[in-house]
Length: 67
Image (tube, rainbow, N blue to C red):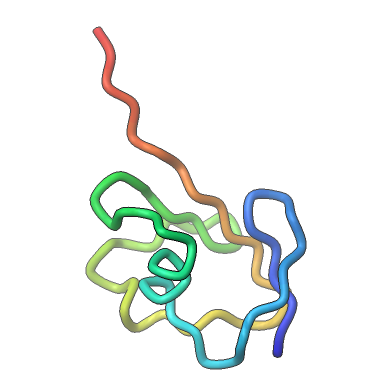
């Protein structure tokens, strides 16, 4: 297990978890969110490749429609 921060909350997750798994485990749609890891935007095309690392700081940003 490793410890990461998700939206300012400490969480323990299994090792070798990629971002798509993290979203799936939380029930978050891949189409409705942007991900920032350690203050760097991770393109959706790389979510299945990025393996969460100890002490990562991950932020989920939901898309908001407006006018």
